[in-house]
Image (cartoon, rainbow, N blue to C red; front, side, top):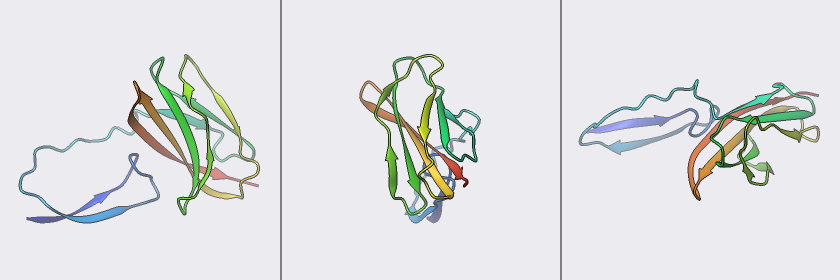
Length: 125
């Protein structure tokens, strides 16, 4: 039969939705997403100037992050980093206008992208 599928959450963003109608012949399983298993922390949030990104990854994994506005415009893209223990990266966001943004952290290992996580960032004056 037909079903309307809604995709919402960490794989895309907490602010953006996607819906489509799919033909489904057989359901083989449902995987629940554990939002507690976050790939990174960012603070302070809300922020006025400096934003700290603290990834929680395995040693040697590669990651990068981006700041995107709610119109999907890329405002900032970091370089690629090789993760090491207790890494924390400082980003100056003072030039951003007050508002809501997305911080997207992408993780790869062995050249294969395997995880993307989005979090809301609140920028204050």
